[in-house]
Image 1 (cartoon, one colour):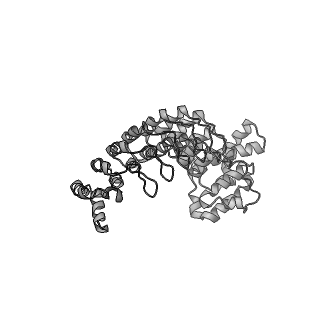
Image 2: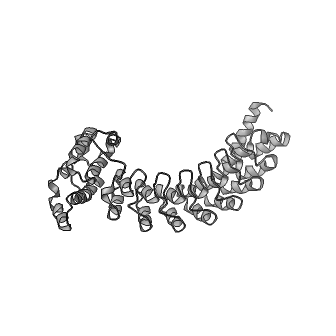
Image 3: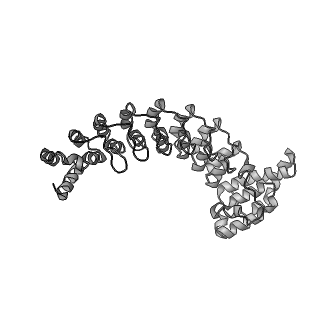
Amino acid sequence: MNDSSETKFSAAVSAGDLAFVQCVLRDAPELAQKTNALMLAAVEGDARMIRFLAPFSDGKAKDERGNTALIHASAGTNAKAVEALLPISDAKAANNEGCTALMYATQYGPAESVKLLLSHSDAKAADKKGLTALMRAASRGNSKGLKLLLPHSDPKAVNNNGQTALMHAASRGNSKGLKLLLPQSDPKAADENGYTALMMAGDRGALECIRLLLPSSDPKEMAKNGWTALAFAAMRQRIECVKLLLPHSDAKAIIGPGKAIDAPRTNALSSVGAPEWWNCLDFVVARGAPEQAQWAVDLGRELRGDEALADLPECCALLEKEILIAAIADACQSTAGDTVALCAEEESSPFLTNGPRRI
């Protein structure tokens, strides 16, 4: 057969034209393997075509990326295609990235595919990035797949960055998956950067995840860069998350150790960036120096303009009050009565009058 005939044959396989494929293979059965017909049918999720091609094909063959027909089918939505391929395939085979059929099924396929593959696969296997099927299910919000995987997996396993399945669920706002994982996970665990699941939920703005994590987490815990869960939520302007985290957090630690600012125009300050200038504002006040807040406001005006500055993020306004009162109280070594007095006088502070009040 010439190239044109092979192209027509491949097109017929992809189109599901079984009659044409049967006719061609009757005279040229070698064409099935020559054109990778089984993989073409797997990509289409055509279970009927797969069953016909199986006797003519090598189910363990791989393409240039190391994918088998089963891996292709597992990334699709038809569990029948996975079922048709299992008898002639190696379910534990991995592609060039170390990904198996089970990993793709949990990330893209239906729960039926996961169920079919589980008894033929190693659920604890990890790809080259250290990602397991459980982590992929947590990231994709595949609660059904995650529930099937849990009895066969290690929820405390970490990827190459030190992240657990719980962290993946939190970072994606997957509250259903997080609820399933929480009893078998360590919510206080941190990745290589010191980020916990609570910090990731704050960064994502995942309110329900934060609610679930708070009872068993430490909101005052700092990442290696000195940031807390509250800091991440505030930086992303997650106002409801800020409100939820604030009573459990140290507002003065909105920017933690290692972020010292010696002068208004240092690299550390400049690197904050226009949308996040108010973090500097929080920081200088948190260090007990509210009188320095004016230059931070001026920087914000320079970076964002007067019009943008007038639209101060609501979470910044929410944090201003908490941080300012605490910082001044500490600086003056005030008693509880002094702090109450500061509450009444706060409107006169230049830190508060340079932006609109929203609380």
